[in-house]
Image 1 (cartoon, helix red, strand yellow):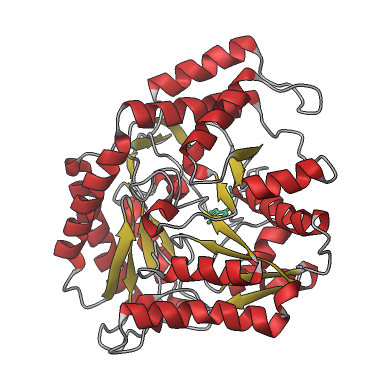
Image 2 (tube, rainbow, N blue to C red):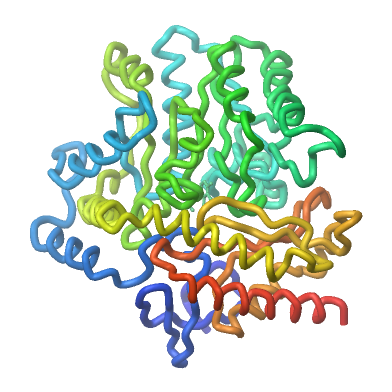
Length: 444
Ligand code: PLP
């Protein structure tokens, strides 16, 4: 009996004792290909020597200095790097310890911005169904993942949800991408008008939806239209790139591919590559200026924000990505992964959609491609796939469909940026076996 309350009280998990490159080793001597980077975290793989060296070096200098007394050179250098590479206008960086903390801070920044501006009546947050923004109460409230929210509803701040941009499920037959982009974005405008244009604080969305919908990119121009609608009503746009950002889709920020810059952007996971817990909010000059010329501070804070060890890890990870031109590898291996997934699953009776960008791709599972009907959630197909894959020495990130049956189980594939084509081939081969075995198991 373990004293550690892990995720599941029932599951018996292997004990990880080591990792190297894209592999993790367990106590029993088994090796797993980390084809999901944990949860799209490990962008450099495990035990990268340059990151380990940077961590040792920082540990020898100073491990911790509280941010109400000191700043540190390493946190300043990380902020400079992030600001230099940020989308236009996002010149300020707030360092926290993970994705949920980043979302909490972004929501509070958005609210405080309007208080500073003399618009304290603004109180509504709009987000999307089938999204995930974290598990703390504010982030959970913003998320549109009903099974996660259900039992905590009485504790959640009121948020409003519109449909995601989900071409496979929600684009009508014969509807062009352009017409669908207009219709999907119109849902935001309708919601703002319904709530009262001067009552809304922000719209929050993942640029490419991660775990909850499975590497779901928007159709062309959807986010541009969203940006225009936000500007029309003075509503702030928060893009959550905790999972899809920091190079995972082939550009440093996923929104670069949309030609859109938000007012606030959250990043985490790939920022520190799992070497330390770290997240950040990138905020625009106008929000920073409102704080600077108003109360003079952002009313928030955490004990471990700007942690020197976390900053050192993130700085080293980002320097290696740049030095080794790993985003080029993400794009090349992303194309290879897409080809391999299409070879293996393109005609598979139970794979309805193959989608994603860069090394952030997914397959969506259906009982029948022509009807797109999801598997019965009670079969827990995603859990069976995970089990089969682990048995095959493969870590992927399967998730169940929605509880209302609007979407199916899917499997997220997000290997480290250092993956080579032979790694991708092995990942797809093992995944194919795991999917087939899980479906057979579910049907028996
Ligand atoms: N936002 C998105 C898009 C995420 O995928 C996640 C985590 O999966 C979070 C926020 C929360 O991040 P964390 O688990 O680091 O709190």
